[in-house]
Image (cartoon, rainbow, N blue to C red; front, side):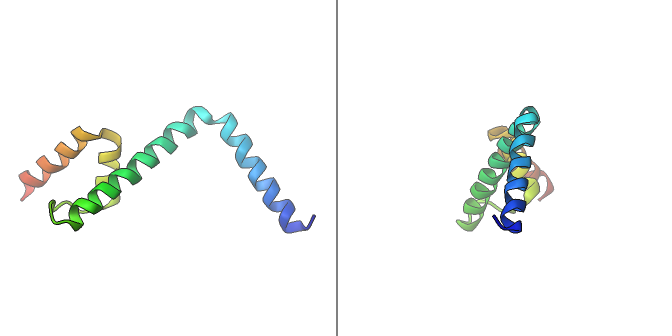
Length: 83
């Protein structure tokens, strides 16, 4: 086994052990990251279709990912209030 392969095996093993030990913190963060990505995708599609003036940025996506439909209503209300 070459040195590069040993480094990759070590890094992947350390990441797996850390994920097992820290799963109470890692799993919710991964879920939030997935929901944020999905929210960003929804915002991107809606803005590309011209239905919304909201920007598809990380902050809007995080609000939508964390709060869901109420977050979407919040973003729309904030847009309406500031326009």
